[in-house]
Image (cartoon, rainbow, N blue to C red; front, side, top):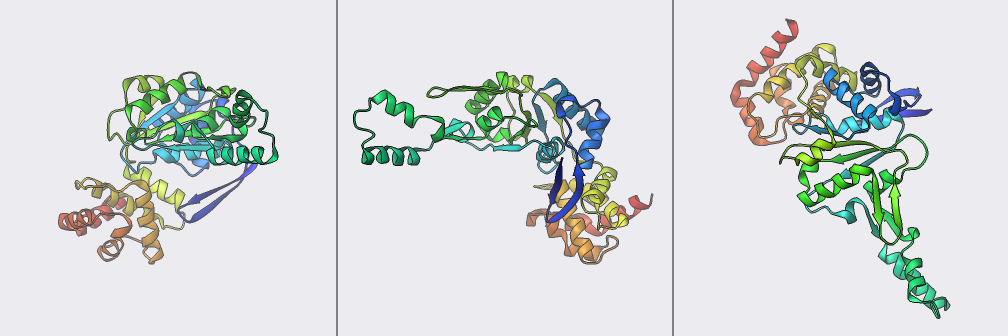
Length: 326
């Protein structure tokens, strides 16, 4: 057992000593829902079902949705719940095997070669033996994909391939090849194959379509913004210092603000930050004055802030209070 200590945006929540779950043998969807909730993530039934099926079928889980809906957090929470290591591969345009799989530590190789020359060990050595020594595992720099494949004993790691839509077609094809049999071949060393495949979570903000071949390899789930009621529950779970009335009104107001037509609609993390900011200022409920003063915790673009104010922030606040009371 290990202490699970999660960092929730500056607020640490000690959940106590908890036995790590064996993710390979989770018995039902309800166990997944409870396991994620115990680690401060509140999924809906559809997401809990998708995670359950991905774990039992040992298939990668592709999560698509708008930024800020909690896709990346799913992988982090699964790692906490299962006790495995979280291995994150952040995708970006131009990423290749050197950043994703492995590369050679050329500086150490050069230093080792010069040491051999200085000590006379290189004299008389043939080219093949020198190459074997320089291109051995001691000089191999493991990147996330290889780390996940090579993981040893203990709980399986969770491989997070984050924002795969930012990578290019060539990398996506390479990723599909790795996920097909969970093995990687390095010509100078040999083949690394996973004894126990990692749990794989792939996220996409859908800035472009992920290719059908990769989608067919995965289980798919679209992650939407939570409804106001569930978002209020998430606020209470992640920020227990926030009053219940305030949590509900903030959740309803955030839902209404997302419908205004913003350049960057606020995610769940911004909603939690907004609730915390209001609570720190002593707010027990939402009103026009404190909403206006703290809007920067929710909206990160001036144009979005102006649009919300023009749309009538007072009406949004009043409607949030009415919805909470209904």
